[in-house]
Length: 427
Ligand code: IZC
Ligand code: ZN
Image (tube, rainbow, N blue to C red):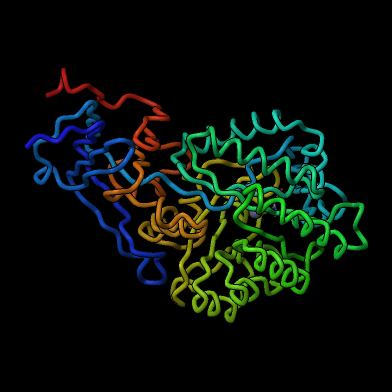
């Protein structure tokens, strides 16, 4: 019997389906479904068949892509970015080289606050165009779903402007976006001596954010000189009561106990966790809060000590990985580079890294049911890699291995030729 399909991917050397019933924690992160000599069929933007070439019979395709024995995986998910902002911070690199710490630059009114100044001045269209540029680059690196945070307004008007830009991008850009309100990202100068009043101001726009569906999650930077654990607890509890999911920038630089707080509040994710305590890690495993690790940031901040991924996995935590793409502590859209940092600095295995950037990353932003897996019935978000197998990506580092990105069944980023022919010439 002939089956008509829109797109058929044939001659896949290695296919990672990432099939999973939920987030993968602990030892379960080591388990991958790999199909050799595979075929994938797509109809109306949805996956209708995944299997070996022997089991793929009778397809008649509008378009066939011969994958030439390459690796094929689900589109990657980047669950932590700050991609909507204005300006850049290259002038801070010299300060860093002189040994001025990230939090000191912030204290002096630079860092996040310098990006805030520029973002306040930018028009919505300017922000949109710049963010689109960065998202295009993320897509070219194989990301088909991403989270994006506000946090460069620190005043209602600009925070809402950022979230509106993210919503417009969600409607128009091939990457599926999930928005997080990070109004509590730093204390603006106006409120230096009264952070509580500032947090109150940020809470005052939650109803509007909810009504206009501008964000699903609320996040806070719990850090020395920014917000304390107690301030964070009260703030997030209120956000939770208003129906938002929770995220925390926890224990990124100093170990304050943000990890424990994330678990107590049943946050969907706790992010960074460089200084997470043993107790905090145990609590994450119990609460099912996903640990989103950002080794690109630790590298760029010039730190020696990285998050304890091995300990987390041993304790049964579900670990995800992200770029943390932002203009200060991690200016890169290259999620493949993060794979190498995860391998060398976090000592994660290739299998764990792939789980962390697909299944677990999707669950960390509430998209576990739609993104991160290449299985029948899901949207066809697929990457063809110029790589012979999945071990190859963390290994060959610093360059882009994407050959073709397919979003909802459409080729959206094609960096070089794969043999691509219509059924009339092929079958
Ligand atoms: O702009 O520096 N850590 N927030 C918390 C950031 C890094 C982003 C930035
Ligand atoms: Zn961040």
